[in-house]
Image (cartoon, rainbow, N blue to C red; front, side):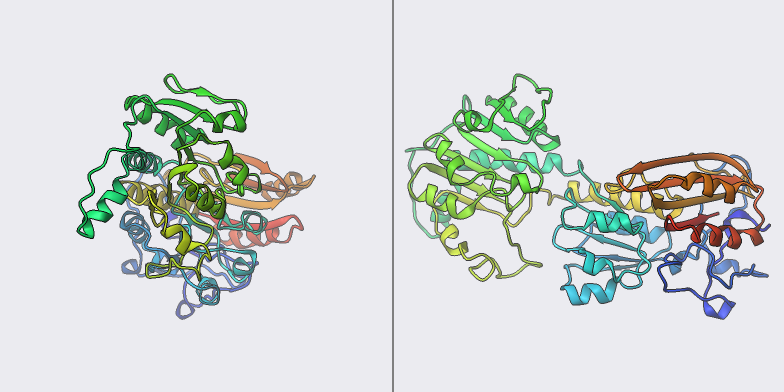
Amino acid sequence: MPEPSLSIPIIDQANGLSKSPSRTLSMSMSPPTNFKSPASWDSSSFSLTRKQTGAFAKQLKPFREQDIKILLLENVNQTGQKILRDQGYQVEAQKTSLPEDQLIEKIRDVHVIGIRSKTKLTAKVLSQAKNLIAIGCFCIGTNQVDLQYAAQHGIAVFNSPFSNSRSVAELVIGEIITLARQLGDRSMEMHQGTWNKVSTKCWEIRGKTLGIIGYGHIGSQLSVLAEAMGMSVIYYDVVNLMAMGTSRQVPNLESFLGSADFITCHVPELPETTNMIGADQLALMKEGSYLINASRGHVVDIPALISAMRTGHIAGAALDVYPSEPGGNGDYFNKELNNWAEDLRSLKNIILTPHIGGSTEEAQSAIGIEVADALVRYTNDGVTLGAVNMPEVTLRSLTMDEPDHVRVIYIHQNVPGVLRKVNEILGDHNVDKQMSDSRGDMAYLMADISSVKEEEIKDLYQSLESLKSRIMTRVLY
C-alpha cells in the first residue's frame, strides 16, 4: 500500500478515472465504480506528501484538494477564506448573495457552501446540490437553511453561535445611551445646520432598568455590561437560567414588560417568537420606555411599533433587523421592500441600522475561523462537532503509524438493525474504534478499521452504499 497521504482514489479523466455527478457518489472522496490504483503520482500535483513517521496526525484526504469546490457568498471574512484556501480547495468567493436561479446553478457541483444571513438554502435549492456534503453558516442563525432536508440528505450544517456575542452586546449598550440622550436626532440636526441644545426627556442610564428578552450568550453578556454602567437588570426566558451579577429572572412576559425602562430582544426566529412584541405587548410597556431589537426581523410587529411611537407611549427604538432585508448594499430600504419603511424612517428618536450587530472586524474574523475550521474537520476527517443538524460524533485522529487504516462514515436512517448490517460488512477487518449517535430519524456512524488493502476499499464502499438505510457513505483514508 502506498504512503497513506497519497491513497487518493479520485483523479481526473486524464488519469483514467471519472467523477460521478450522481447522489450515490455525491462526494469526490469516495471511490467511483471504475476505481483502480494509480501506478504513479506526480508529487508536484499534491500538497500532502508526508515523509515523517511516528505518531503524527494523519490527514485523511482521499482526494485531490483542487477537486474540492467551495462556494462562499456574502463576503465571508478573509480569515475563513484563507483557512479553506490553505487546504488547497477550489474556493470561489462572492461579496453578495445570489438570486435563487443563479444559486441553483452555482450549487450544482460544489461540495461545500458558505453563507451568511441573506442566502436562503431551501429544499428546492438543496435538491440541486448533487455533491454537497456541508454548509457553513458564517453567522449565528441557521433559520435560512432547511435543516431537516439537509440532515435527511447527509448534509452537515455548521454555524458560529457565540463568536459575535460581544459585538452585539456592545452595540445594544451604545443604542441604550443614544436613545436615552436622543443623540441620533441631535446629530442629524447638526448635520442639517441646526443647533438644538435641549435636556428635556434626556436621561442618564444609571439607575434605570434594562429588561432582556432571551438570556443566552448575548443577553447574559449584555447583562454584565449594563450592570457595570449602573443599570438594574431583569430578564425573561422560557427556561430557568442562572442570573449574572444581581440580575433577576421574571417568570412571565406581562409583568416583565411593565417593569423595564429599556427592553431589548435576543431570541431566535421561531413560530413562538413571531410578533412576540406586538400592539398588546407594547401597550404593557412603561410610558416613555424604549425598545431595541437586534435578534430577528419578525420578532417585533413594526407597524404596531410605529403607532406606539407616534402616540409617544414608546419614547424611542433601535432596530437592526427587519422582516424583509435586501440581498446587498444599495438604496433598497424603501416601501417596495417593506410597505411601512417610509413611516418608520419618519419617526423621531429611532435608530435604524442594516443588520450590523455582529459586523465588527473581531467578530467576523472569529466567525471565519470557527466555521472554516469546522468545515475542514468535517471534510477531511468526518468530525461533526458543532453541527446543528447532526449528532456530534468524533474519533481521535489516526496517526502516521497506522498506514493501513480507513475511516468509514455511514450516515443512515435511524432504524433497527443497521449496526448489525454495517458491522457484518466491516467484520472482515479489525474495527479499532467506533462511535455512533442518532438525532431524530437519522444517525451518524464513524468507525476506524485496520488491515485494509487499497483494492478492498471500493468493495467496502459499495457494500455500505447498497444498504437500504443509507443516506450517505464516505470512506476516508
